[in-house]
Image (cartoon, rainbow, N blue to C red; front, side, top):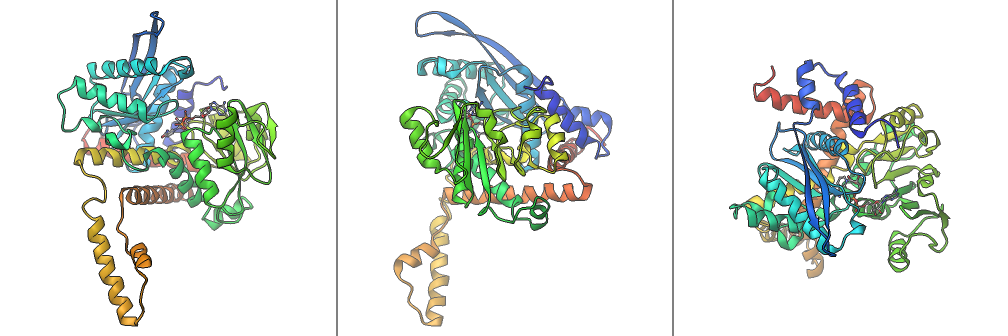
Length: 468
Ligand code: NAD
């Protein structure tokens, strides 16, 4: 672990980027600081009748756009500094992918493995109650989402608690995203961050000049990949990378890592872990008991998708990957960043690469406010128009198209198709924006991403007349 706090790491990255802009000092300070931090301590009545005091936080980093947005993590090492740092990254992330929100983050200091489901539910509902009572949640105020250690079930408890405490029947569903689809969630949210990670890496790997500099060919087909963390983000990132043609050569979890230079079949590893409780001892693979050592194995692309500060000044010199795709938040410390850049490693930064989650959360929020499933109004219309065009063309050239094929080529877009296509468009466009800045300013992708974010937030403050 680095001795410099996570928030300091983020601030150092901000300062590096701010140096490339001409914004006044006061404006830069306003963009950098965390606007509000709510620290709470509340009681949990445990199943055995005892009382435990739970510590938790919600940070709203920037109110330049509302609502603020950011996940809630359950982790026993979460602290105020980390929550503020993650909220800060959310502000920049939203700006980079043009999602009209400020940044926020929540944290509850628990190791969820030590609590029963009933206890987790009581913690989640009480946390929501605290947020409601201090106006730290609401469709137009602050909209949480899943993060490390939380998922659709917690989001369902949050929306249910919010609804029961507020008189907001029309928009209540938009108070949180990442909900189950049956409770107003959007199709594609679960896999969004991993899919966005894949789209982002694929985009980076499609640029010949950049790949040439790394001694690599374009595309994913010949690339070897290591993924750390097989949770929501890591699993989906690995899945889409594998489906996109890359070879997964190592997977790392908290219990250890497995390595096979010839490739690991992700689904077989997941099935093995389900059966045995561990990824270790997977047939054909070598066990690595010190899981973190897997980050130092030979590969083209390293995807840390677990926690922050896993690549530090200590292990950065040993990293052999040519590309690091930051699926987790803050996996590379500022010192490690400098070492890796000096070695010529391409780092695709978290503020861009894992923005798929918030992008699709934005789609979910829009769906909740409009009360209509994406594609519902257009799917049949699109299909009928397509059929008319294809049939007319087939008639003109004198061919018969079998009904099954006709149905395939003319199908209208469903919610999942629209969500994926919106995400793909977002990741591709944002990557181009960042890369163009990196080329123009002769800087790395993270600095370029931060410059992009700072400029966009500065414009919002300018439009409010707060700064010239
Ligand atoms: P998750 O809880 O679903 O998964 C995390 C995984 O990491 C777990 O499987 C856990 O066992 C594993 N892990 C923990 N310590 C480890 C270690 N030392 N070595 C290897 N593996 C370890 O969480 P998630 O939602 O996948 O989030 C992962 C990261 O992605 C976090 O940094 C989070 O902030 C970031 N992120 C998540 C989302 C999202 O939509 N879920 C969006 C943006 C960013």
